[in-house]
Image (cartoon, rainbow, N blue to C red; front, side, top):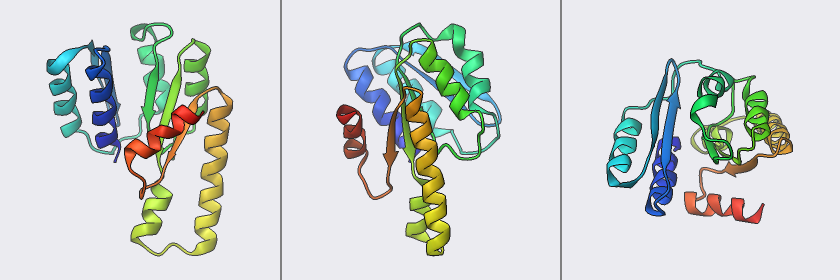
Amino acid sequence: MGTIAAASVASHFLKRRDSVALVTYGSKMDYLGPETGDKQNFKILSNLASVSASGSMPLQAVTNALTSRISRGSPVFIISSLEGDGTTLPAIRSLAGRGHEVIVLSPSSIDLERLVSRIPRLSYEVLKLERQNRLTAISGYGAKVIDWMPDVELSQALMQVKGS
């Protein structure tokens, strides 16, 4: 879900002739500097084709490493389930504090898991509440948060930003 979303978002901004950079991370961080045009779109798609969900690099380590590479005030789009990383809140607070518009697209892995397997109702409700609390805390730092449900098309999910 995340790689398709990243490709779609990048394509949208590249069609507007905006410069787009891409950062992927897991066991290591890969950075593709900001550029425009079809060549950049190809680089982004090639990079995303080899991405897999693995590793344990914290978001704050990534944002700290990239601080000097991100122009002040540039929007930052984060695509993450936001699970298992205790540095998410401080990383987003830091980005917002530097004047970045932070947009978090968070695919709900809890709801995806519920669609494909049988999670006990009480367990699901507890996990869902924890997720909602995490998303609320992130929005409290000034980020625009999109809670992307697995049965909702990306274009519909992204419309939540306009309503913010």
